[in-house]
Image (cartoon, rainbow, N blue to C red; front, side):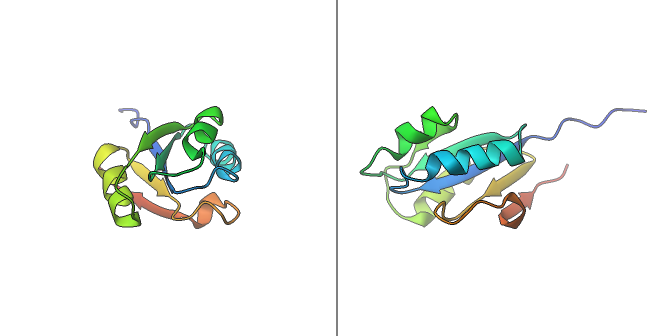
Amino acid sequence: MSLPLPTQIAVLLPCYNEAASIAKVVAAFKNALPTASIYVYDNNSTDNTAEEALLAGAIVRREPNRGKGNVVRRMFSDIEADIHQSWATVSPPVRASCCNTARYGK
């Protein structure tokens, strides 16, 4: 009998000027999914979104071409995981169970 392989979970958060809320969002996902890798994709923000996300413990990547389509393409192009958990906007309260989840089985 073989043991199941560990599941890799990636939380992908596209952000534009979310410095005021990103730390709470990262903390909420870390609490809900403690084994997940939390990626914040800064979409060329003019505030300190990237710095706040880094301080909160997220892995920060940047997409200089503004627009949700650009940042979402970049996120799914860059990150490989068994499960992608994404949140289109970080301003509302975080509920991990209501986010868009895509599972890529083997």
